[in-house]
Image (cartoon, rainbow, N blue to C red; front, side):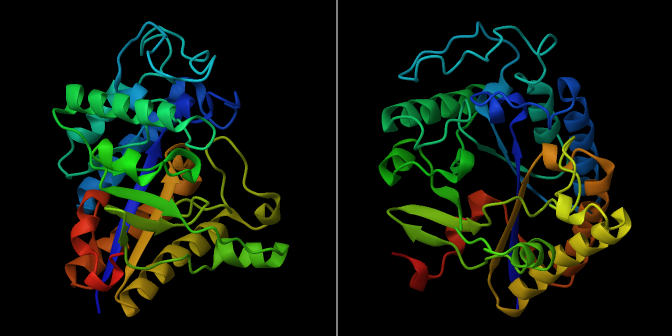
Amino acid sequence: MTGTVTLSVEIELGWGVHDIGEYGHLSEDGRAEREFLRQLLDVCDETEIPISFDAVGHLFLASCEGSHDGPYPDGWFDADPGTDVAVDPLFYAPDMIENVRTRDTDHELCTHTFSHTPHGTVSTTAADADLDHAQRVHEDILGERTCSLVPPRHMTPPSHVLRSNGIDVVREAANRRASSRLGRAKELLLGPPPMGDPTIEDGVCRTLSTTYPNLAAASLPSGKRPAEPLFRAVPTRIRQRFHRQYLERATMHAIERDTHLHLWCHLYDIANHAQLAPLAGYLRTLERLRDRGRVDIAVMERLSERVPVSRTA
C-alpha cells in the first residue's frame, strides 16, 4: 500500500484579516513569519519535501498605489496602505515569494486569490475579478499562471468561475466537527482527519481537508495567539509529541487505506518555536517513508492526474 500526502501552507500576512481588522496573531512587520518560513524551507531542502504554498496575490507586489480596479465591495481595499514592502511588510512580501521559488526543492506557488476574497461574502463577479487579478500577477511575476486554488475561508467559487480562470485543482474542507468538548479534544489531538482520493466534479479536481489547520497543532500557540485553553495545563513537550504522533498516525492511515491525505495550516500558525519542532520531525518521517516507497508527496497541481476513474463525476 502507498499513501499520497499533500501539504499546503497559506501565506496571507495582513491580507488574511484585512476585512475584519484583527491582526493580533501576527508578528510585528511579519518578522516571525518570514523567519519561520526560512526555517521551514531549510527543512524542506534537507528532506526534499515539496509544499503547496498558497499565497495571496497582493503579497507578490513590491509596491502599489492602494486602489485596485474591479467590482469590489465599497471599502474593500481600505486596509491597503498604498506603500511598499519596506514601509508595510504585512501587505507586500515579494521577498517571501522569491524565497519559496528559488529554493532547491520544487515547491508549488498556487493562489489564495489576489486580496483574500471569500466567495460568499462578495458577489460572484467580484470573486471572478479577484481571481483573474491573482492569475495576472502570477503570470507577470512567475511567468505562468497557476492551476491550483485554496479559497479563503473554505468558500469555493462556482465551477465555471474556477474553469474560466484556469483553475483545475481546489482544496475544499470537510464540514465535520465534534459537538462535545471531549470529542473536540480527541479530534484535535488524535484524529484521524478526513481523507480520501481527490474527485473531479464539473471539470475541477477537489482535494479534501479539515476546516481547521492540522499541519499545525491547536494544542500549541498559533503565531502570537496562545494555545486553546483546553490544552494549556499540559507541558509543551508532551503537546509537541502528541501532534507529531497525530501527523504520523494520519499518514499511516493513508498508507494502510492506499488513499490521499491533505494537511494544511497558515504560515502564521507555525511562526513560533513550539510549532516548528514537531513539524520538522514529521517532515523527516515523511522523508523516510517516501524513500521506502510507502508514501508519495504530491503538490496540489499534481493531484488531478491521480484521480481514480471511479471518483470522476
